[in-house]
Length: 396
Image (cartoon, rainbow, N blue to C red; front, top):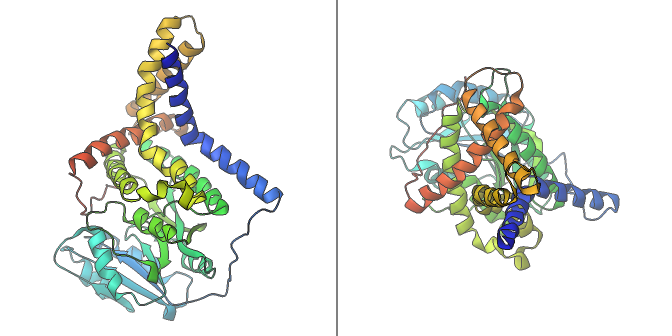
Protein backbone atom coordinates (compact mmCIF):
# COMPACT_ATOMS: atom_id res chain seq x y z
CA UNK A 1 0.00 0.00 0.00
CA UNK A 2 2.89 2.37 0.64
CA UNK A 3 3.98 2.05 -2.98
CA UNK A 4 0.43 2.82 -4.15
CA UNK A 5 0.30 5.88 -1.89
CA UNK A 6 3.56 7.18 -3.35
CA UNK A 7 2.21 6.62 -6.86
CA UNK A 8 -1.08 8.31 -5.95
CA UNK A 9 0.59 11.49 -4.74
CA UNK A 10 3.09 11.49 -7.61
CA UNK A 11 0.28 11.19 -10.18
CA UNK A 12 -1.80 13.85 -8.41
CA UNK A 13 1.14 16.25 -8.19
CA UNK A 14 1.90 15.94 -11.92
CA UNK A 15 -1.76 16.51 -12.85
CA UNK A 16 -2.22 19.53 -10.59
CA UNK A 17 1.13 21.03 -11.57
CA UNK A 18 0.38 20.66 -15.28
CA UNK A 19 -3.02 22.33 -15.31
CA UNK A 20 -2.94 24.67 -12.31
CA UNK A 21 0.40 24.57 -10.48
CA UNK A 22 2.54 25.83 -13.33
CA UNK A 23 0.25 28.82 -13.78
CA UNK A 24 0.43 29.61 -10.05
CA UNK A 25 4.22 29.21 -9.97
CA UNK A 26 4.59 31.32 -13.11
CA UNK A 27 2.44 34.10 -11.66
CA UNK A 28 4.44 34.06 -8.40
CA UNK A 29 7.72 34.37 -10.30
CA UNK A 30 6.34 37.22 -12.39
CA UNK A 31 5.11 39.07 -9.28
CA UNK A 32 8.53 38.73 -7.61
CA UNK A 33 10.29 39.97 -10.75
CA UNK A 34 7.93 42.96 -10.99
CA UNK A 35 8.29 43.81 -7.30
CA UNK A 36 12.07 43.73 -7.32
CA UNK A 37 12.36 44.93 -10.93
CA UNK A 38 14.30 41.86 -12.03
CA UNK A 39 14.89 41.39 -15.73
CA UNK A 40 14.40 43.73 -18.66
CA UNK A 41 11.09 44.49 -20.32
CA UNK A 42 11.03 43.98 -24.10
CA UNK A 43 11.43 47.48 -25.54
CA UNK A 44 9.15 48.29 -28.48
CA UNK A 45 9.55 50.94 -31.16
CA UNK A 46 6.04 51.92 -32.25
CA UNK A 47 7.37 53.70 -35.33
CA UNK A 48 8.99 50.54 -36.74
CA UNK A 49 7.36 49.84 -40.14
CA UNK A 50 9.36 47.42 -42.32
CA UNK A 51 7.95 45.75 -45.39
CA UNK A 52 6.18 42.50 -44.45
CA UNK A 53 4.50 39.54 -46.12
CA UNK A 54 1.14 38.15 -45.04
CA UNK A 55 1.46 34.46 -45.96
CA UNK A 56 -1.70 32.38 -46.37
CA UNK A 57 -1.36 28.68 -47.12
CA UNK A 58 -4.74 27.45 -48.34
CA UNK A 59 -6.46 24.37 -49.68
CA UNK A 60 -9.95 24.73 -51.20
CA UNK A 61 -10.91 27.85 -49.26
CA UNK A 62 -13.12 29.59 -51.86
CA UNK A 63 -15.87 30.13 -49.28
CA UNK A 64 -13.49 32.22 -47.17
CA UNK A 65 -11.58 34.17 -49.84
CA UNK A 66 -13.91 37.19 -50.00
CA UNK A 67 -14.09 37.63 -46.21
CA UNK A 68 -10.34 37.06 -45.79
CA UNK A 69 -9.40 39.59 -48.45
CA UNK A 70 -11.89 42.15 -47.16
CA UNK A 71 -10.39 41.76 -43.69
CA UNK A 72 -6.84 41.96 -45.09
CA UNK A 73 -7.49 45.17 -47.02
CA UNK A 74 -8.85 46.78 -43.84
CA UNK A 75 -5.75 46.05 -41.74
CA UNK A 76 -4.00 49.07 -40.24
CA UNK A 77 -0.64 48.86 -41.99
CA UNK A 78 0.77 50.81 -44.96
CA UNK A 79 -0.58 49.17 -48.11
CA UNK A 80 2.71 49.67 -49.96
CA UNK A 81 4.54 47.73 -47.23
CA UNK A 82 2.10 44.81 -46.92
CA UNK A 83 2.63 42.02 -49.44
CA UNK A 84 -0.15 39.44 -49.56
CA UNK A 85 0.87 35.96 -50.70
CA UNK A 86 -1.41 32.94 -51.08
CA UNK A 87 0.01 29.46 -51.66
CA UNK A 88 -2.80 27.18 -52.87
CA UNK A 89 -1.24 23.76 -53.41
CA UNK A 90 -3.78 21.19 -54.55
CA UNK A 91 -6.76 23.58 -54.56
CA UNK A 92 -9.24 22.59 -57.25
CA UNK A 93 -12.34 24.54 -56.17
CA UNK A 94 -11.42 27.83 -57.84
CA UNK A 95 -9.59 29.34 -54.86
CA UNK A 96 -6.50 30.43 -56.90
CA UNK A 97 -8.59 32.23 -59.55
CA UNK A 98 -10.66 34.01 -56.92
CA UNK A 99 -7.57 35.29 -55.13
CA UNK A 100 -5.98 36.47 -58.39
CA UNK A 101 -8.85 38.90 -58.89
CA UNK A 102 -7.60 41.02 -55.97
CA UNK A 103 -4.96 43.74 -56.50
CA UNK A 104 -1.52 43.64 -54.89
CA UNK A 105 -1.96 39.94 -54.12
CA UNK A 106 0.31 37.14 -55.35
CA UNK A 107 -0.81 33.56 -55.84
CA UNK A 108 1.59 30.62 -56.06
CA UNK A 109 -0.38 27.58 -57.14
CA UNK A 110 0.67 23.97 -57.62
CA UNK A 111 -1.73 21.27 -58.76
CA UNK A 112 -0.14 18.65 -56.52
CA UNK A 113 -1.35 18.51 -52.91
CA UNK A 114 1.55 18.20 -50.49
CA UNK A 115 -0.04 19.41 -47.28
CA UNK A 116 0.29 22.71 -45.47
CA UNK A 117 3.96 22.29 -44.59
CA UNK A 118 4.77 21.48 -48.22
CA UNK A 119 3.03 24.70 -49.26
CA UNK A 120 4.89 26.68 -46.61
CA UNK A 121 8.29 25.29 -47.54
CA UNK A 122 7.67 26.03 -51.23
CA UNK A 123 6.08 29.43 -50.67
CA UNK A 124 8.82 30.73 -48.37
CA UNK A 125 11.21 30.70 -51.33
CA UNK A 126 9.16 33.59 -52.76
CA UNK A 127 9.20 35.74 -49.59
CA UNK A 128 11.67 38.63 -49.82
CA UNK A 129 10.56 40.82 -46.91
CA UNK A 130 12.42 40.76 -43.55
CA UNK A 131 9.29 39.61 -41.68
CA UNK A 132 6.70 37.03 -42.70
CA UNK A 133 3.33 36.73 -40.98
CA UNK A 134 1.44 33.44 -41.24
CA UNK A 135 -2.35 33.37 -41.08
CA UNK A 136 -5.14 30.91 -41.89
CA UNK A 137 -7.66 31.60 -44.62
CA UNK A 138 -10.67 31.03 -42.38
CA UNK A 139 -9.71 33.54 -39.68
CA UNK A 140 -10.19 37.28 -39.42
CA UNK A 141 -7.43 39.42 -37.94
CA UNK A 142 -7.86 42.34 -35.57
CA UNK A 143 -7.39 45.64 -37.40
CA UNK A 144 -4.12 46.49 -35.60
CA UNK A 145 -2.77 42.92 -35.49
CA UNK A 146 -0.07 43.33 -38.14
CA UNK A 147 1.20 46.60 -36.68
CA UNK A 148 1.32 45.23 -33.12
CA UNK A 149 3.18 42.11 -34.21
CA UNK A 150 5.70 44.06 -36.29
CA UNK A 151 6.38 46.53 -33.46
CA UNK A 152 7.75 43.70 -31.29
CA UNK A 153 10.32 42.86 -33.97
CA UNK A 154 11.92 46.26 -33.39
CA UNK A 155 13.74 44.48 -30.57
CA UNK A 156 16.59 42.42 -32.12
CA UNK A 157 16.26 39.65 -29.49
CA UNK A 158 12.78 38.78 -30.77
CA UNK A 159 12.73 36.14 -33.50
CA UNK A 160 9.08 35.14 -33.46
CA UNK A 161 5.81 36.76 -32.37
CA UNK A 162 2.61 34.89 -31.65
CA UNK A 163 -0.81 36.44 -31.88
CA UNK A 164 -3.82 35.30 -29.90
CA UNK A 165 -6.39 32.83 -31.08
CA UNK A 166 -9.89 33.95 -30.13
CA UNK A 167 -13.03 31.87 -30.33
CA UNK A 168 -16.37 33.48 -31.16
CA UNK A 169 -18.62 32.58 -28.25
CA UNK A 170 -22.38 32.39 -28.41
CA UNK A 171 -25.00 31.77 -25.77
CA UNK A 172 -26.01 28.61 -27.61
CA UNK A 173 -22.48 27.18 -27.76
CA UNK A 174 -22.18 23.42 -27.56
CA UNK A 175 -19.50 21.79 -25.43
CA UNK A 176 -16.80 22.36 -28.03
CA UNK A 177 -17.44 26.09 -28.18
CA UNK A 178 -17.82 26.67 -24.45
CA UNK A 179 -14.85 24.48 -23.54
CA UNK A 180 -12.60 25.73 -26.33
CA UNK A 181 -13.31 29.37 -25.48
CA UNK A 182 -12.51 28.92 -21.78
CA UNK A 183 -9.40 26.89 -22.65
CA UNK A 184 -8.00 29.58 -24.96
CA UNK A 185 -8.62 32.34 -22.40
CA UNK A 186 -6.55 30.39 -19.88
CA UNK A 187 -3.90 29.70 -22.51
CA UNK A 188 -3.73 33.39 -23.36
CA UNK A 189 -3.00 34.26 -19.73
CA UNK A 190 -0.23 31.65 -19.52
CA UNK A 191 1.30 32.93 -22.75
CA UNK A 192 1.40 36.51 -21.44
CA UNK A 193 3.21 35.32 -18.32
CA UNK A 194 5.52 33.04 -20.33
CA UNK A 195 6.51 35.96 -22.55
CA UNK A 196 7.14 38.18 -19.54
CA UNK A 197 9.31 35.55 -17.87
CA UNK A 198 11.33 34.79 -21.02
CA UNK A 199 9.59 33.30 -24.05
CA UNK A 200 6.32 31.83 -25.21
CA UNK A 201 6.66 28.11 -25.94
CA UNK A 202 5.03 27.74 -29.31
CA UNK A 203 3.02 30.03 -31.57
CA UNK A 204 -0.63 29.84 -32.63
CA UNK A 205 -0.83 28.79 -36.27
CA UNK A 206 -3.81 31.08 -36.86
CA UNK A 207 -1.49 34.10 -36.51
CA UNK A 208 2.26 34.19 -35.94
CA UNK A 209 5.31 35.79 -37.50
CA UNK A 210 9.05 35.20 -37.73
CA UNK A 211 12.10 36.92 -39.13
CA UNK A 212 12.28 35.51 -42.66
CA UNK A 213 15.99 34.79 -42.37
CA UNK A 214 15.30 32.41 -39.47
CA UNK A 215 12.96 30.13 -41.43
CA UNK A 216 14.33 26.65 -41.95
CA UNK A 217 12.56 24.19 -44.20
CA UNK A 218 10.59 21.79 -42.03
CA UNK A 219 10.40 18.03 -42.49
CA UNK A 220 7.63 17.22 -44.99
CA UNK A 221 5.77 14.93 -42.58
CA UNK A 222 5.54 17.60 -39.84
CA UNK A 223 2.07 17.90 -38.31
CA UNK A 224 2.46 21.01 -36.12
CA UNK A 225 4.30 23.38 -38.42
CA UNK A 226 3.65 26.46 -36.26
CA UNK A 227 5.03 24.76 -33.14
CA UNK A 228 8.15 23.35 -34.78
CA UNK A 229 8.96 26.57 -36.67
CA UNK A 230 8.57 28.82 -33.63
CA UNK A 231 10.45 26.57 -31.18
CA UNK A 232 13.36 26.19 -33.57
CA UNK A 233 13.60 29.96 -33.68
CA UNK A 234 13.77 29.90 -29.86
CA UNK A 235 16.45 27.21 -30.03
CA UNK A 236 18.53 29.62 -32.09
CA UNK A 237 18.65 31.99 -29.12
CA UNK A 238 15.77 34.33 -29.97
CA UNK A 239 12.62 34.78 -27.90
CA UNK A 240 9.03 34.20 -28.93
CA UNK A 241 6.94 37.16 -27.81
CA UNK A 242 3.18 37.47 -27.53
CA UNK A 243 0.62 40.22 -27.96
CA UNK A 244 -2.99 39.30 -27.08
CA UNK A 245 -4.22 42.39 -28.94
CA UNK A 246 -2.83 40.94 -32.16
CA UNK A 247 -5.49 38.34 -32.68
CA UNK A 248 -7.08 35.94 -35.13
CA UNK A 249 -10.71 35.14 -34.55
CA UNK A 250 -12.70 32.13 -35.70
CA UNK A 251 -15.74 30.11 -34.74
CA UNK A 252 -15.46 27.03 -32.53
CA UNK A 253 -15.58 23.49 -33.86
CA UNK A 254 -19.08 22.55 -34.98
CA UNK A 255 -19.32 19.86 -32.32
CA UNK A 256 -17.17 17.77 -30.01
CA UNK A 257 -16.69 15.08 -32.65
CA UNK A 258 -15.04 17.67 -34.91
CA UNK A 259 -13.05 19.09 -31.99
CA UNK A 260 -11.84 15.58 -31.07
CA UNK A 261 -10.71 15.02 -34.66
CA UNK A 262 -8.75 18.26 -34.56
CA UNK A 263 -7.20 17.58 -31.17
CA UNK A 264 -6.15 14.02 -32.05
CA UNK A 265 -4.19 15.47 -34.94
CA UNK A 266 -2.68 18.14 -32.67
CA UNK A 267 -1.80 15.52 -30.05
CA UNK A 268 -0.11 13.26 -32.61
CA UNK A 269 1.78 16.32 -33.79
CA UNK A 270 2.64 17.25 -30.21
CA UNK A 271 4.22 13.87 -29.55
CA UNK A 272 6.07 14.11 -32.87
CA UNK A 273 7.32 17.56 -31.82
CA UNK A 274 8.54 16.35 -28.43
CA UNK A 275 10.59 13.70 -30.21
CA UNK A 276 12.01 16.13 -32.78
CA UNK A 277 12.71 18.83 -30.22
CA UNK A 278 14.20 16.43 -27.68
CA UNK A 279 17.29 18.63 -27.28
CA UNK A 280 15.03 21.28 -25.71
CA UNK A 281 14.59 18.97 -22.72
CA UNK A 282 18.19 19.77 -21.76
CA UNK A 283 17.61 22.36 -19.04
CA UNK A 284 21.37 22.79 -18.58
CA UNK A 285 21.62 24.09 -22.15
CA UNK A 286 18.36 25.99 -22.57
CA UNK A 287 17.62 26.95 -18.95
CA UNK A 288 14.38 28.91 -18.56
CA UNK A 289 13.16 27.94 -22.02
CA UNK A 290 13.42 24.23 -21.13
CA UNK A 291 11.59 24.82 -17.84
CA UNK A 292 8.76 26.57 -19.66
CA UNK A 293 8.66 24.03 -22.48
CA UNK A 294 8.46 21.01 -20.17
CA UNK A 295 5.95 22.61 -17.80
CA UNK A 296 3.63 24.12 -20.39
CA UNK A 297 3.82 21.64 -23.26
CA UNK A 298 5.67 18.38 -22.74
CA UNK A 299 3.74 17.23 -19.67
CA UNK A 300 0.40 17.81 -21.40
CA UNK A 301 1.41 15.67 -24.35
CA UNK A 302 3.10 12.87 -22.43
CA UNK A 303 2.91 12.10 -18.70
CA UNK A 304 -0.19 13.92 -17.51
CA UNK A 305 -2.91 12.09 -19.52
CA UNK A 306 -1.31 8.79 -18.47
CA UNK A 307 -1.33 9.94 -14.82
CA UNK A 308 -5.03 10.81 -15.09
CA UNK A 309 -5.75 7.33 -16.40
CA UNK A 310 -3.63 5.48 -13.82
CA UNK A 311 -4.92 7.57 -10.93
CA UNK A 312 -8.36 5.94 -11.18
CA UNK A 313 -7.35 2.32 -10.35
CA UNK A 314 -4.70 3.43 -7.84
CA UNK A 315 -7.14 5.65 -5.93
CA UNK A 316 -9.83 2.93 -6.10
CA UNK A 317 -7.56 0.35 -4.46
CA UNK A 318 -6.56 2.84 -1.75
CA UNK A 319 -10.17 3.88 -1.20
CA UNK A 320 -11.36 0.27 -1.07
CA UNK A 321 -8.68 -0.58 1.48
CA UNK A 322 -9.69 2.47 3.51
CA UNK A 323 -13.42 1.85 3.11
CA UNK A 324 -15.22 3.24 0.07
CA UNK A 325 -18.04 4.73 2.12
CA UNK A 326 -16.00 5.74 5.17
CA UNK A 327 -15.04 9.00 3.41
CA UNK A 328 -11.43 9.01 4.44
CA UNK A 329 -8.87 10.93 2.40
CA UNK A 330 -8.47 8.39 -0.41
CA UNK A 331 -12.16 7.52 -0.65
CA UNK A 332 -13.03 11.22 -0.91
CA UNK A 333 -10.42 11.66 -3.65
CA UNK A 334 -11.79 8.64 -5.50
CA UNK A 335 -15.39 9.89 -5.36
CA UNK A 336 -14.32 13.36 -6.47
CA UNK A 337 -12.82 11.78 -9.56
CA UNK A 338 -16.03 9.87 -10.19
CA UNK A 339 -18.02 13.09 -9.77
CA UNK A 340 -15.81 14.80 -12.33
CA UNK A 341 -16.30 12.04 -14.88
CA UNK A 342 -20.04 12.05 -14.23
CA UNK A 343 -19.86 15.76 -15.05
CA UNK A 344 -18.11 14.84 -18.30
CA UNK A 345 -20.89 12.36 -19.04
CA UNK A 346 -23.50 15.06 -18.45
CA UNK A 347 -21.56 17.28 -20.84
CA UNK A 348 -21.79 14.53 -23.45
CA UNK A 349 -25.55 14.28 -22.95
CA UNK A 350 -25.93 18.05 -23.28
CA UNK A 351 -23.43 18.33 -26.12
CA UNK A 352 -25.65 19.78 -28.80
CA UNK A 353 -28.18 21.57 -26.62
CA UNK A 354 -28.33 25.21 -25.62
CA UNK A 355 -27.26 25.90 -22.07
CA UNK A 356 -26.69 29.05 -20.05
CA UNK A 357 -24.10 27.67 -17.58
CA UNK A 358 -21.22 26.97 -19.93
CA UNK A 359 -18.98 25.74 -17.09
CA UNK A 360 -20.97 22.49 -17.16
CA UNK A 361 -19.17 21.71 -20.41
CA UNK A 362 -15.68 22.12 -18.93
CA UNK A 363 -15.34 18.55 -17.53
CA UNK A 364 -16.38 17.12 -20.90
CA UNK A 365 -13.93 19.31 -22.83
CA UNK A 366 -11.14 18.46 -20.36
CA UNK A 367 -11.91 14.76 -20.81
CA UNK A 368 -11.86 15.13 -24.61
CA UNK A 369 -8.52 16.97 -24.44
CA UNK A 370 -6.83 14.16 -22.56
CA UNK A 371 -8.55 11.39 -24.49
CA UNK A 372 -7.21 12.98 -27.69
CA UNK A 373 -3.63 12.73 -26.36
CA UNK A 374 -3.99 9.00 -25.78
CA UNK A 375 -5.58 8.48 -29.22
CA UNK A 376 -3.01 10.79 -30.76
CA UNK A 377 -0.19 8.72 -29.25
CA UNK A 378 -1.48 5.56 -30.95
CA UNK A 379 -1.94 7.43 -34.21
CA UNK A 380 1.64 8.69 -33.99
CA UNK A 381 2.95 5.19 -33.25
CA UNK A 382 1.03 3.79 -36.23
CA UNK A 383 2.28 6.68 -38.38
CA UNK A 384 -1.18 7.02 -39.94
CA UNK A 385 -1.62 10.81 -39.66
CA UNK A 386 -1.59 12.53 -43.06
CA UNK A 387 0.10 15.92 -43.44
CA UNK A 388 -2.63 17.03 -45.85
CA UNK A 389 -5.20 19.50 -44.61
CA UNK A 390 -7.74 17.82 -42.37
CA UNK A 391 -9.97 20.78 -41.63
CA UNK A 392 -12.53 20.34 -38.88
CA UNK A 393 -16.02 21.66 -39.50
CA UNK A 394 -16.62 24.96 -37.74
CA UNK A 395 -19.78 26.35 -36.22
CA UNK A 396 -21.61 28.81 -38.45
